[in-house]
Length: 114
Length: 111
Image (cartoon, rainbow over all chains, first blue to last red; front, top):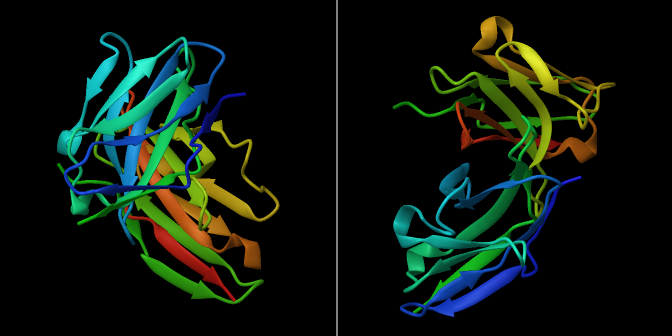
């Protein structure tokens, strides 16, 4: 069975500082990995994905994520956080080999303060 | 490009009542998903359609939940009868290759 772990319920960072939101995964085959963001009272918005190729993936709003196969991680990063980045972030995984479902983590709340 | 549309946005019902949600996916997307997101948790897949066929409904409580996707486009999700624990946001998503795109969701409150 596939699973995702987001070990931090909340991450606090000052505006202008770099941020990291952690994600580790477990899947039987090769992983497809995703990050989504959810603002209050809104649906999930796609940020970025890793399918194959370069381990560093760049996405929307200046976010990027690094795929690390040996550590089974896909941490989300941004060099300089903005207050407007404050939201709920979800990591998700699916098995590349099948039409399998997308399994989400429990989410990490990012709070960026001035 | 228009996104995934869902209605209603909010619904309040009493337990044991019935409720239905509607989803219109992005044009051309063959795969449609219904997810349930309980407050404080990540979304959980209820059912996945490929065109109008069911691919995965292993986590759908079939004694009370049903879903259909007639003609391979729009989909409806029904709960009958509703329980208190069904209070959640119901998210519809569609995909063509790889990425899922989500609608705004329907927030259901069961009293």
